[in-house]
Length: 267
Image (cartoon, rainbow, N blue to C red; front, side, top):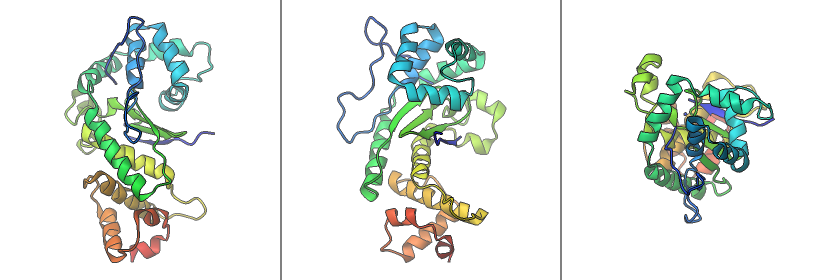
């Protein structure tokens, strides 16, 4: 069974070539450069036009991403269901979802800033923890469900969950505290937090108190702040980790992430 991690996380419709085939991003990029693959562009093409070639590209070039979207995010059926393509298309004909597609096409016509931030963050993370591999990162069109989906060495960003705190649709359904996290600047911190959590999950071999869980998440958030060079996450547990690391100057990010002695951290 695939292990998928969720947290709170549409698209530019871009066409290349006379056959409406979308080229993957970053074919000429440097080896250490992180570029978000625009799965959402192909998805958007299919959902707005019903173009069969776009559907074929979704299924042949991005089978894992398509399965995760249909089965784990949207939960509308199994990918081997003979009627799943029709269900998939009809699901997005909702006027709300169509408006999300249009909005993301405008806001995320360019993601160069996000690619740059991801490249820098993963560069720092891999320098600190060399054994961590960079996942295949892609953007998708969710349905106001999960923001970030991690599994099978892939990381999916649902751009419809990052349209800004004042996006009119959000005002109807989300409190201010949640809307403040649904902004472009949270994409990279969210990606890093849930990917690191997937690599260093809470231990399953012992009973975890709420305090232990909070300290574990504080470790992850503190590391995210370090690798992104931003103080995105600020709470008492992040402050606890900061004090701990200042007392233990020889402890590295790698050893911190592996340290599940929560009692010693809390001292």
